[in-house]
Length: 323
Image (cartoon, one colour):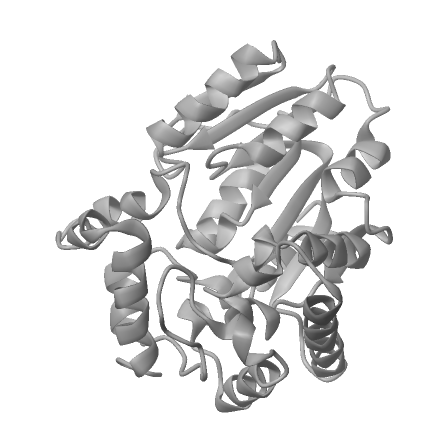
């Protein structure tokens, strides 16, 4: 376990440049909930992460759905869209971009979004009102304190939210009770090392991956710094910045598989790609031949890594089974 690293010092400086001193000051509180909320209560976070790259999203689409242009929302909708009276709940839905897409694709579904971030849900609600999406509703609640109905939901969705929850066995048990017979749990989640405490081998491979990227494209977003090396996150900064981040991520799959059986489970990497491209992804939003070669080399390197290592990110569909 790393306590404090050079990566932490660099990250603090980058956050000040990208998000301002106010964001850093929001972390100077003893309230864990307040520090967590400050990480998510802005719908327009200014940063440079790998998911802003269309070529990366196409890669993930392919690894999940088999087609670069088919999103997982379309894939799930095709699987379950013909079912009648589908009731979906998304827990930790944030700005609800995925849930809004499910609402567009499936007008007959009843979709509920639950999150403790009032600002993000208000943004989502305005979008739904503007688009006249009457099949989606928004509930501002802490899921730990929110009572779910028993035997009700056909689909429960966690999109990049489950790794922020603690007491996973209790939470998944609560979700299990809320689901109808043969209900499906769907996740699109980080399931790797708790609090990004990557092992030495993974950090070494991340740095080998960085070497595949031309120097021109290593300039950190909004700074004059160049990303020459990745040192790994320290535990102190992780807890101060967001106490919920990857708090029990290693326990996600064991907790799910205690209650559910696997329908399908697909890894789509991120082990090297996500940390290597963090803060430099903006260079690859628009690709020319040289940039595409860099990104494709990163993809190939991660593919080789995944032949011998479990994926840090998983798309999974799980079926409720009797205990």
